[in-house]
Length: 494
Image (cartoon, one colour):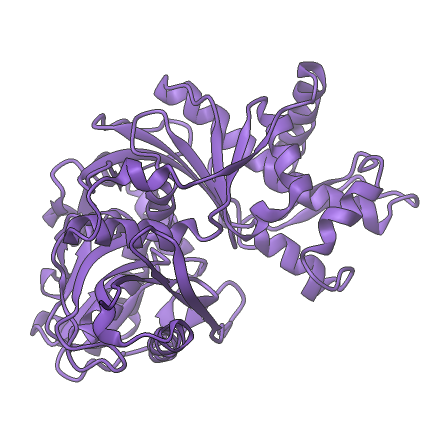
């Protein structure tokens, strides 16, 4: 008898991945492919949505080949994605109208400032849980319509579709039959009321967005459509989950209940704390967003979005060329007895939570004649962990919810030095799952549960094993470190 598998499509900022999971939740085969990043001007970051689609098709084909299975053996599909990246496309042809504007892009800073001067930020936050920052989709969409009036004219006529990457992929996987998104992705657009869980007319008016371009927003575990005319997938294969990448990692790590928290160390760092059914707003620069409970129903979470994490390690490799590969940094950092009081603030695209300063750029403080390569590598790794500590402390303070452990995932979480230092500065155990691709696993698990392929998420979670990092730093040293970091940040943003 033929075995059946779940297909997870994980469409990220720098590449696309496909993973096939068997009935026991084990990865059968996977494939990954990078695609080009476009930087047309300083602060601008773009993708070609057609290239993204081609990369997704390629990794699906490779994963099926590696698994040596027939596409008929794929029971259902889950999609997870980079969240705030914006695509506009022609509804009839499916052709993009322009390059996709990526979540890292900062071109809409002036739009955000104008809206802040109109005293709209508190109104927007109450509706969306978000702050006015170029990070989110709404201002990107406003910019496209303002700079391309023809797009707006076509949109009003119903000829244009807007979507984050999940919607773009779904539209094409379904043969242009489904234009939908899920609550987690919708909650990142600045256009979605997270209390009422629907697109909001007042927000659409503020951002000058016609309702006709919007996808239908549904719970993450919905029936989003079926595959049509998308080789190498079989016709009629159900698409049973859409979920933003960070919420998918939260779900993949089994963080279903209030107080559960995870941090993903990817291009950036994304710390999420599950709030359960309670909708709470931050006064100190955190975000409120929609996530999923164990059954895939909507729940709330606080999020600390740190724009630069793994990208800082890439900068050491590609920009400064002081390392050859990212994995070297663990060994190099351990060789340095200390950082020599060096502080690296990797604000390459501005500061995210809790500061939200798109105008700030990175800096290195404390350089002396005795500063070494090893010190710089060590300080860069430590800067990632200290940023997480800042947001983690704010989450505990604002939510009143205490997390006893922090679950971690993402590429940079494989760095043992970084994870030990993270446990030290938090003063809490850090648990790293043996499942390296938590984001893809979350989407697969959600699709499998919603389609009946699996029945109990907790039973699946029993297969996870963790490497535990326990804190060793003294409380005095921890406080001193945080004070130096905060003093330096205040100096930088003054």
